[in-house]
Length: 239
Image (cartoon, rainbow, N blue to C red; front, side, top):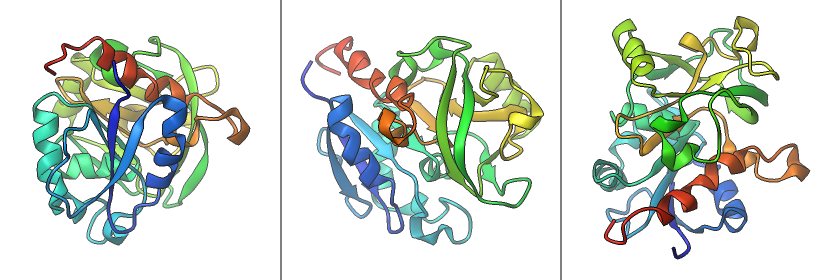
């Protein structure tokens, strides 16, 4: 398998694009920025929607970015089975675009939280693209940085996510126990990350790109980001 070609989409107000581009060599990616006004992805192997405040997060988080020209290409890429990861603001955009269900609302305490957060890995089989380096029940630790990260969906949607194993990450304590005190924003059922039915699109509020080097506090983000190359190596050449 050749080096994965990864598009990192940049919207006005995006800032985590630089973090993804900086750690690309660590995870074996050939990553390049793609401006939101572009209409083509030019044969990439994966797409990243990074964190930030796309278009200032006016109206709702991700509500304007959802209509950027590049999103039609992202949606087509995802529909064809292409790997897509949306972190923080990227998760919000994926929900606004309808690629993932639910919405991210204002944190229940109305505060912006920027801290390291414990998480528990849930159903890895539902997302082999991004969860191949982890095991179910594994506790990991990633940074969060958001004011509107409270995952919300109606009861039927939540039940479907649970029944189909599409909850990939939950907020938890350092030992992997899911408790109310370990939930940093009031997300329903402590949901921190979900996938689409096909398992190729992952949205999560934590920032794996900020946890790729031990020198900055931890490297658990590599468990997610390095999974891409392994998954691609197992796919048919035609894919």
